[in-house]
Length: 137
Image (tube, rainbow, N blue to C red; front, top):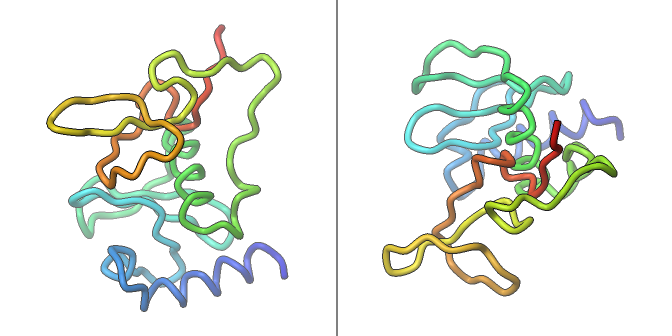
């Protein structure tokens, strides 16, 4: 199955998902991320688009936004894991998040994510766009 066919199938399935994704269903767009309004989508052609306000017009995602969205795609849809940005050999673990790409919030305090973390409250690392790594230079 080619990616476009897979993405079309996932779009149809998420329209009936029991979570936030069904509320962001749009014809020809696979929901990847949303927090209180703006949303990011993947098209069957592989483009990442987003809106800046709820139900607003879609625009192409910038490079950092695209990286963030593709990491979300790999998390939400394991079949799309190969869309995750590839880590270059020259990359280093992000010093902000310790290579996890996210933080957890517990009792009002922000701390690094860790193996076995059960927290549902997470904040994605803005320094590495939640990839867990950065490239200097």
